[in-house]
Image (cartoon, rainbow, N blue to C red):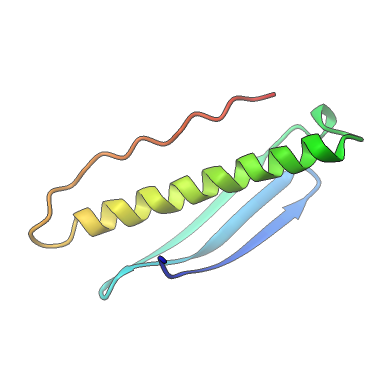
Length: 91
């Protein structure tokens, strides 16, 4: 796996993940991502709320992967690649 020391948090429509991504021996990236989401859209529906949280966590994972790939590709001798993040629909 990819070493990533992190801490998540959730508070009334706000979800965050902050940490340090260890992309290589000499490549460490500090990153913090905050998301606001519409709690009214999933209010009272535990399944919908859990799905929304899972979607946000998935986006956090894709952001971490994009950072990791960017810094891995930026190592000497590697060509940089552009990473496309997935679109997550509101709903």
